[in-house]
Length: 156
Figure 1 (cartoon, rainbow, N blue to C red):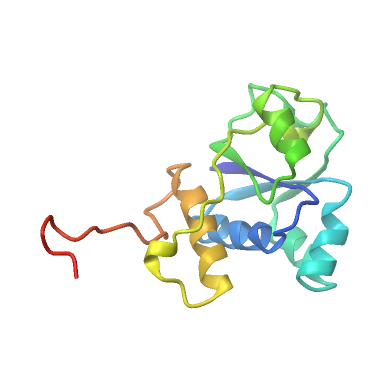
Figure 2 (cartoon, rainbow, N blue to C red; figure 1 turned 120 degrees about the vertical axis):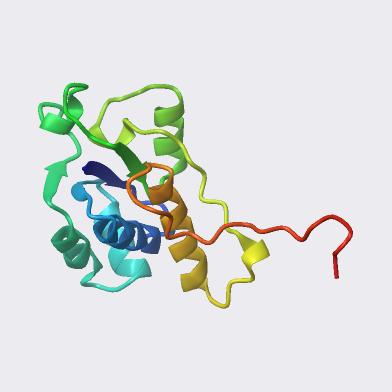
């Protein structure tokens, strides 16, 4: 199974690495597309070698403007696309169908933290968000923890 992972220059670059790891664990081939600012944001927010780590996880890396790439075509069999993180510009382009680059051809799943799971660290939050995104592509059994509410009348 093939999944496109798009990375914009928005804050939250660690989500890209967590998504790539979750996709790799699910056995996905990763087609990576980065915005112009993604490299800088990865270096600033994660570490200088984060881009190299991300690219090493990918099966293929595409220039975002290469609208002749295989993944630009509807005939290319992909399970889906995750853009993580995404900027407001990328979100608006995706929502309004402005598919002017490989980065903006995606479905939207907002990165909502599952605070009800009582995460112990920021890494727990980003790992859960990445696992949930991969789960919604139906690639493998869920790596995300699910909400399990108390039965009615048993609230502490």
